[in-house]
Image (cartoon, rainbow, N blue to C red; front, side, top):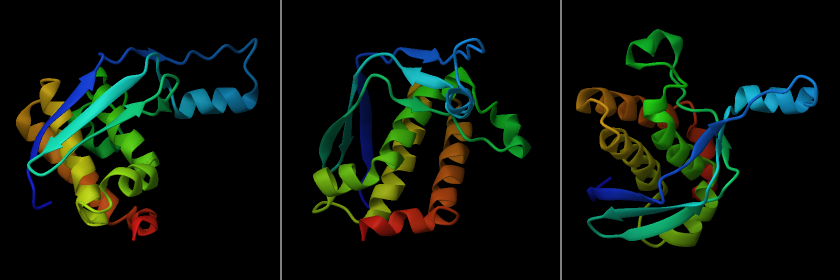
Length: 162
């Protein structure tokens, strides 16, 4: 991305809970969903992103569910995928990916390219990790891995923005 990320503000502080499986009441589909997406957001949060050229914001609604950080077992030196240190960064990143068409076409289409949006999601992920006191080197490596994964393995999912 040609422009620099200045900052990410998340208000109010996200309240995150673990979705507990209740074997007596949950059906198989619900149990599968809770295992795949164990975290839920308990309040609406507004995310404001400022770059050198743009300021935009979006809301992550109460009830949003996600899986935490996708960290392959070979990279567990960085932490476990359900690590609390990565919850907020993974929530914002996953929301931006899942809602890429709406966010990009609704807010950023005339301002940045799809490739810049993809890169921006990784920069935001990195910035939130650093804001959450993750070691800078670890945050940089994690964001780089996320960006490479999105640019290669997930490349087809970005075609919808072109």
